[in-house]
Length: 162
Image (tube, rainbow, N blue to C red; front, side):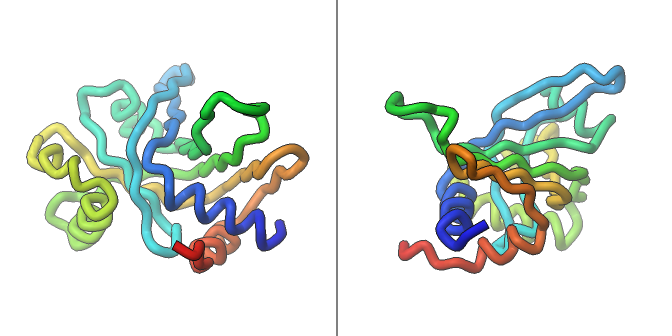
């Protein structure tokens, strides 16, 4: 993976806020949903804040292995199969409301998604933490890479010139 591709990945994660979440239920039936996300500065953890009333939350509580797919939006030009995207797989865990980890993650989430503050007052919402275990980045045609969490951390350090 070259430096330009690393910059594309870093930009993708930082600039998007909406991702596809893939889960499976106890019987192995898949479900995809769209969720907002936040992340640590070094991309060592991603945060998802969702209601227990939703099917995908029930799935994560029963089967915590998930995949989060972040992609560049399709604006209607060119071949959408060349749009950059990353699939981040791993196991989620519930962050307990009274923990320091929850408070740190909540602060990161609200810094990124301030309009979601009221949701933290709802008792049915859970804050999940995803630790990346597997990553698959596609930066365009013939630019697919399986990545380590270490490479993701390296990308997170890059300056985007923002």
